[in-house]
Length: 251
Picture (cartoon, rainbow, N blue to C red):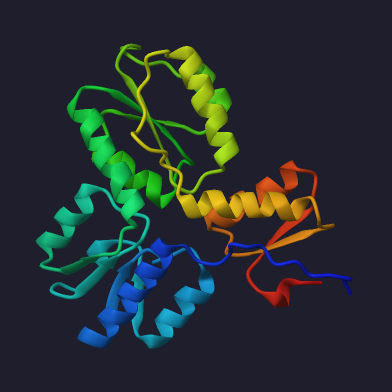
């Protein structure tokens, strides 16, 4: 048994996650089950199972939802075509997109409207990246690492902007941004940092724990970008770290 167990502070869900979960629970109370949710409302298997037990039905695609039903969009945001498909099926849509993700979507629209190539820093296939890219598919190019930033080519180096997924490693994102600024000195960015403040302060908390711990356990699901980044932050500082769903995975 360990001599001490340290708990990170802050920890737990961010405001966007709490808002999204509350949205599903309120919809279930108002409309009654079933209420359909596109994708996992948040990337936490225990939250998903709890909501399923209350009557939420999670679907991969809005076109899988019966016509006229209630559909909730997850915290990660969606591309405009999802709203179009939902309207064609006369779905009652409730948008639980995190406000910080919505901010990135609005920035993508603005840069695209002004004719910029948008370099989106993020992980390919993540739901948030898919949604943001869908706002300006002809303008967005995904950049997943500093190495990709060093080799990316754009049609007009004088009209380039960058945005980022909100749940990335702060340190790695800053490294990518520095490379982009070296290559494109006139590159424009968002008025304020896209990385979620809760993501940032939890990564800082893990850095503090890493200096005081022999091992770090991050409680979260394997499809959670935030949880995976916390593991990476700890390991980058030389502290063994593991991602677990719950106490049953502790050996």
